[in-house]
Image (tube, rainbow, N blue to C red; front, top):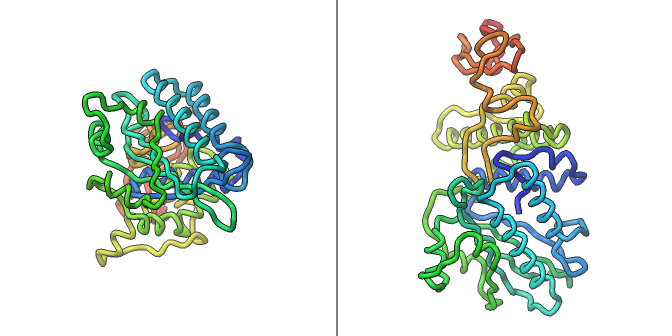
Length: 339
C-alpha cells in the first residue's frame, strides 16, 4: 500500500517520527518515478506479523491507515475496491509468511496491474515476497519488478482461465503462493517479463546516493513540505541528465552537496516538476493542499506580472516565487536578470 495521493502527500510525513522510514519512502517514490526494473525491501517478523525494519507495528496496520487517509483526502470511487483489495491481499501475505510453520524459501507473488480509467494507479508492477533466514532470524525480502503485461497477459502466463481472467482487484486481493522453495525471484520474473522501458538499478543507485540528491533529502526531512519534496525530484532529474551528458562526453557538472547556493535551492524548489507516471499514484510533484503554492501555478502571473522568464545573460528560465522578486538569476547569479 502506498501512502500517497494523486500527488505525494507530505502531510503523512509530517506525522512520521522515523526519518529513516521517510528516506525509504522517498527512495521508493523515486524508484517508481524512474521506472526502475527491480527494487528490494526487507521486512522483519514480530509477534506473527511482518514489520518494517526496527519497528514493532504490523505493517498491515500501516496499510490500513494509508487506505483510510486516502479515502479522506482523495476519494476516488473507481479506486475504492482496489484499495480494499490491497489490504486483503497483504493480510494473506502477512498470515502466510509470518507463520513459523511456513518453510524457508516460500514465496508469494502479488500482482498490481495498471488501474482502470480515472484511477490514481497508472503503473504496472508485481511484488515477489520471499521468506528468508539469517542468523536464526526469519525475515521477508520483497523484490518489486516493473511490468508491461495486461491482466489478460498475466493470466495467460500464469495458466489462469483466459475466459474469466482477473481484473486488477482480483489480482491484488489474491496473491499467489509459490510452493517451489528453490525457484528464485529472478526466475519467476523471467517467466513474466516483457521488454519495456525501464532504468537499471545501478543507474538509479548513482542518482539516489549522489551527494546532491541526498542534500535535498536531508532538507526535506527537516522541512517536510511540498517545496522541499519537489526539489528532490528536480535534483534527481538534474543528476540523471548530467550522467547522460557525461557518458556522451558532453559538458557536465560535478555536484557537491556543500556547494548548494541559495539560488540553486530556490530554483529546484520552484522549478516545474517533470510529469511522470508511477507505479503508485502520482510521481509528478508534491501535494497541492499542503503546499503554499501549487505546481500548476508556475505558469500564472501575480502582482508583479509574469513569473517565468529567461535570463538575458545565460538564457536559462527563471521562475519567481509567487508575489516575490528576484535579486539575481537563479542559474548564473547575474544581476542583469529582469526580476
